[in-house]
Image 1 (cartoon, rainbow, N blue to C red):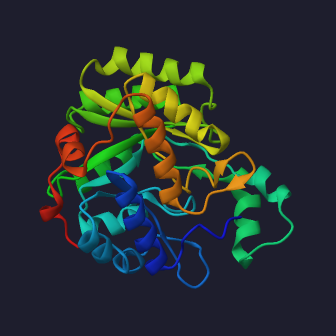
Image 2 (cartoon, one colour):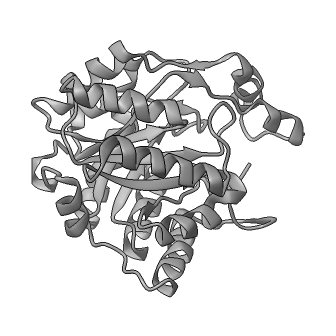
Length: 290
C-alpha cells in the first residue's frame, strides 16, 4: 500500500535511525521477511538491523511482541528473549483485530501473501489471555528486566492491567499506550481518549505514564490532543501510511518531524532518550543483548 514502508533490514535500520535523529526517543520495531515483506518473528530477521541501530543512535529500542496474528504468544516473544531490549510492547487483552475492509480498496498487490492475509483477518483473534500476559511478564520482565509498553485497545484492557498490577506482575510506573481506531477496539474519537485517560487516572493515580496511538487519519489530531492532556505521542508508518489527507508519508521520520512541530508549537519539549529512560525506569542501553 506504500513503497515507503521498509521491509529490508538495511531500510528498517535507516528509517529507525532517521526517526531518532528527527526526535523519536523510543523506536518501536517490527521485522519483515527481506524477500517478500511478510511479517516475521524470526530472531535472525531482528538481528539483521538491531546492531546497526544501536551503533548509530541512543534511542530506546522497543521490540514488538505482537508480530503476526497467526502466531502463538510464545513464538511472538522469541526475539525479545534473544535480544533483551529495554522495552517491549505487550497487548493487554484478546480481541478481534481485523483489517479485512482494506482488501476491497486495492486491485494491485506487491506480494502474493498480502491480499489473503488481509481478507482472512475477519476470522483472526489476537490472543492475549491472562495466562499469556503472566507468561510474558515473567519471561521478559524477570531476569531480562524489560519494561513494557502496555497496549490498551479498549477500556477493558485498562482493568486487565490493573488486575495484573494488583497480582504483582507489573510495578509502577507502568507505561500505557492508548490504541484508538483499530477495527475490533475502541474508536478514534476524542471523547474515547478522554474516557480512557479518565479511567486510567482512577485506576492508577500517579503510577502511570501514557501515550496515544491514533490509527489512520486520526494519528496527528489525537497526538495533538494527547499533548494538551499531558500525555506522550506515538507516530509511524505502522499506524498510518499518510502525512496528510490523501498524501502518503515518505518515511517514519517525516511523521516524527511533523508531530515534533505540533508538540513544540503547543509549548512542550520533545524528551531525549535519557529523559525517556528516567521517566519509564528503564535498565539502559548497556544492558541489552545486541
